[in-house]
Amino acid sequence: MKQLWLILAGSAGLIAQPPNAETLFTQGCAQCHEGQLDRAPSRENFKQMSPQGVLAAMETGPMVSMAVRFNQPQRRAIAEYLTAKSFATPVEAVASPKAMCADAPGTFTTAGVATWMGWGQNTSNTRFQDAAAVGFSAAEVPRLKLKWAFGFPGELTRQGAPVLAGGRLFVGSGDGKVVSLDAKTGCVRWVYDAGTGVRSAISIAQVQGRNVAFFGDGRAFAHAIDAATGKELWKVKVDDFPSAGITGGLVFYKNRIYVPVKSGEEATGGVPTYECCKFRGSLVALEAATGKQIWKTYTISEPEPTEKNKIGTQLWGPSGAPIWSTPAIDAKRNAVYVTTGDNYSEPTSNMSDAFIAMDADSGKILWSRQMTANDAYTSACRLPDKTNCPSVNGPDFDFGASPILVTQANGKRLIVAGQKSGMVHALDPDQGGELVWSTRVGIGGTMGGVQWGSASDGTNVYVANSDILRIMLPFANNTDADPKRGGGMYALRLADGKQVWFTPPVPCGNKPRCSPAQSAAVTAIPGVAFSGSIDGHLRAYAAADGKIIWDVDTAADHATVNGVTAHGGSLDGAGPIVGGGLLYVNSGYSAAGGMPGNVLLAFSVDGK
View 1 (cartoon, one colour):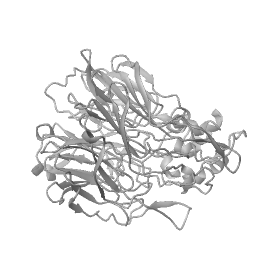
View 2 (cartoon, one colour; view 1 turned 90 degrees about the horizontal axis):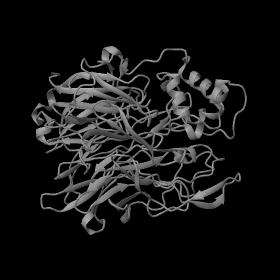
View 3 (cartoon, one colour; view 1 turned 135 degrees about the vertical axis):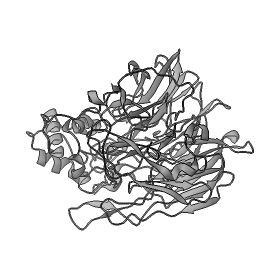
View 4 (cartoon, one colour; view 1 turned 120 degrees about the vertical axis):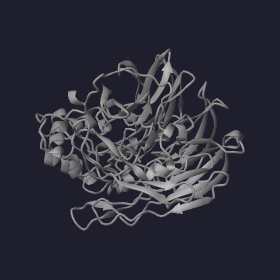
């Protein structure tokens, strides 16, 4: 689940020689990008990017903490070498003049228009859209056809989660561009430059009479912009740690914005000369109108020096317990619920791999429930040099899935989330987080079990299993996804966690980078649950019995409304969203053994 772009991992010390890109790559990048780290993009992947995009990742994006060992000319040399392009090559724009709507930016109102708000569709994170807002019936799902496609130039992975409000889509990109599109046609209303990658879902809310779009970026800045025009209202850094960032959606509640904070230190911490580790996950509450911080609650205590590793580098702990996912709001108890990631170093804490409840007004921790103890992990645990791998060596069973707050027909409430361990858990929010049930759906692993989340209609929770496995190829020291491992879709009864149905994964054949694993977040509407697969297929499952009623292969070339060259790939990360008669889904995910891609697709009944 962590997007570990380890372009520069494994090289000890600053390389001060004149730029020789091949040497720099061999010494500082090859052990990750030539098959040693399964989440690192391959050499071939980078050829689809621009040198500007790779350089941005090293200087202002997810690789900034790793790239510090190289000087600026060396970083530029690496970027040109990996992409096989010069900085003089023109960069394709996400929005040409022809791609703009004729009346851009146009008027904007959310009144009487279908919405998909934030990551979970609502502040409970159910990822369920009701019949009135869907705009088509379960019976019409088999007739869904592509209506339009929108391309994002230079991307390998489509991670920005789309949201729907006021007849528009709002979606971020890896190069920091946030675009507002007409939901029916895909024409561009406006483009905002956040300065670095935007992966978090966008929340739209009314603040002092204005519709405001809130989101976070890869450098831990929270942004507020005018939803109608894209004009920046405020921008606030919520954490100063070098590799801190925001992947979960920002949530609006009672004129406050709740911001989850994660980091890339699990990657950086794998380098033997790095003092692993000092990052602490946190949730930050900001005043929605101004961005002023109201409170910040850390998930673990302040790290302290512990011991030195075998080459004499000082180690620190506890560390980690990041919040990768979107918080859920409990208005009844005025609480905010989050799920946390693992520790990066020892000693481990009791707040990692956990559900945590915080008071919405003060940030005070009300209760926590740890699901896997003694889980400390860095990228070193998967690399040849395991110097900075904690002695417990994972198992890296953290939460990437957001907590779902759901009320059953009998009025009993649950908080539900799946874990990378392959377990799905349900807790009672009205009994201090008491465990109600746990059900296994997968084997689990670093990319196993439940990756990005599930959906619930109030009766069942619909769960997709990843369990992707990388295998070593007999050539080029490279790896590929195992085409026979992973996948499968479950419906679990909310009342007791019992399996209602299970639909086995669909074999994906022998095409390169093919996997049946289902890592993307699930989406549900009345009578149907949607799940994407690493093989590029998006499938619709009948909620009653799990029968597949629709299957579309998105891994293909697509003509785009903005004129950008685009191709679909694996489906992972953000799942589809539905509203106003259309279904929208990202296609392309180069990490985790997947197929790269750079397109957002819109489907409607008969493509009309």
